[in-house]
Amino acid sequence: MLNEEKVILMTKMAAFIDREGKKNDAINSYFKSDYVGFNVIKAVISATIVFGICIATYVLCNFEMVLSNLYNTGNLLAIGRRVLMYYLLLVGVYSLVAYVIYSYRYSKMRKSMKAYYGDLKKLARLYEKEQ
Image 1 (cartoon, helix red, strand yellow):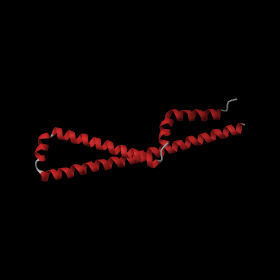
Image 2: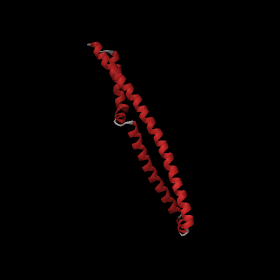
Image 3: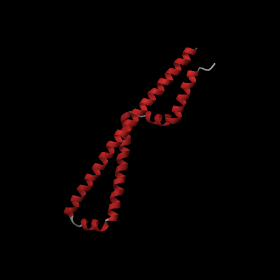
Image 4: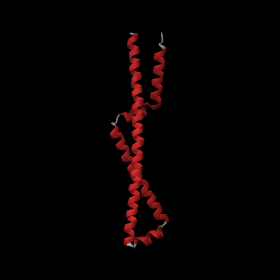
């Protein structure tokens, strides 16, 4: 005879594995600091690439002005400082946002995995009780 409670529990666990299991399993293989740190490094690299593309686009759109400023070294240092400040601001904000997002994702994954492992224990107790 089928135990209705076991069937419901196994269906719930199977749905979790299909829906979130593989993604959560990949995240669960890391420590929180490793997962968050790795993703923040990826965010810094992508922010650097985006900043480079934005600078290249600006230079191409305003090529004449850039060339005229290139010959004035005093102005060139001020522009360099401003560009560096914008870069650091972009990378800092992007890193902070990435840190918050990936910390939240890791915490959410741990919570759902804890619930899944609780369901596994509950299922094991139901099997022990049956025997």
